[in-house]
Length: 157
Image (cartoon, rainbow, N blue to C red; front, top):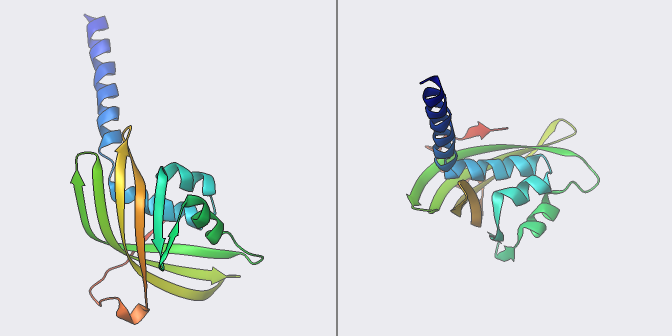
């Protein structure tokens, strides 16, 4: 009887972990991508996107290698902090799309250097229980163009 209970307990743990892995919030993958960018971790960035990832950035089409190259420090070190406000999340089976406000602050040598804002959207696919970003569309905005009701919340890993 103990053996049956033990097997049942292990089975419940396995199923629970599988369900939790499948229930991850797709928006969390978007936040993780920006955290990886802030850490200058191109390997982590590549793990969060699909093989055919596409970024539409200021009228250009980028892949993950172009994005990883663009965020690397060029001579001077800087720190990036990321802030988000979710607009909408829609999940349909193994596909999700999300729209959100994004803001980043940049510090160079410990001093606030710049603050930038965007309105963005992303399409994600659930691959083996993990939400991966397939497409990201970014529209850069002047800070005064961001509506006053947007509530940016910092995300850091």
